[in-house]
Image 1 (cartoon, helix red, strand yellow):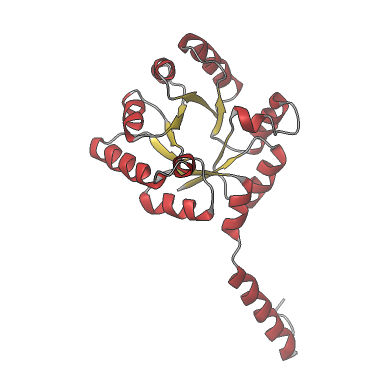
Image 2 (spheres, rainbow, N blue to C red):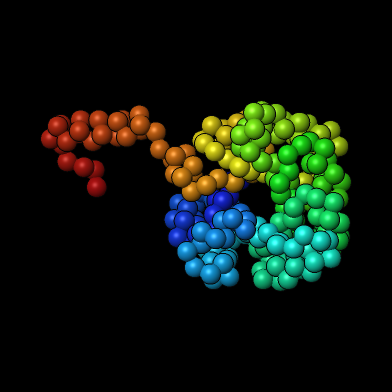
Length: 218
C-alpha cells in the first residue's frame, strides 16, 4: 500500500521524504492556506522533493474552467495528479482530462455509487473521505470495503485512496481492506513509526550491553 502525506507544508514533506516512507503528496485549498509561504512557492518546493504523485486541486467549479485549469496544472510537472470534486461538472471534466491522458484524483467521495461513476469515466484515483463520514455518525470504513468489492468485480483500475485519515487505526484498516493508498496528516505518519514498547526494548538492550562491560563490535 502506498502512503501519501496530506500537507502543503514543504518542511513536512521534506522530513517524511527523508524517511523514505511516502510515495506522494495530496494538497487541497484548505491545506494551501497553511503552507507557510505562497501556495505557488510551496507547490514548486514539494514537486522538487518527491519523485511522483502530487495531487493538486482545481479551484474552478464549472466543467470547462476545471478542464482548462486541470490542463494548466498538469503542465507544471509530469508528477502532478489533478484533483477534481465529484460533482456533475467534475465528472464532465474527469472524462475530458482522462481521455487526454491526464491523471485525475476524484475527491470528496462519500459513497460507493460515486466511486463507481468515477471509475467508469477513467479516474486514476478515487478519494473516499472516511473520517468525515465517521464524524456524522456513519461507519466510513464500510465504504472502502464496498468500493474495493465493486472495483474487483469489474476489474476497474482506479486506485482507492483512503482520505480524511484521523489516526493510525485508519491506516491499518485501509491496509486490511485493500485500499491502494492512504493519505495521512503529518502527525499520523509520525505516530505510525512510534510504539512505546520499541523505546522500552531499545533502552533495555543498550542498558544490558553497557552493564556487561564488553566492547562494541565496531
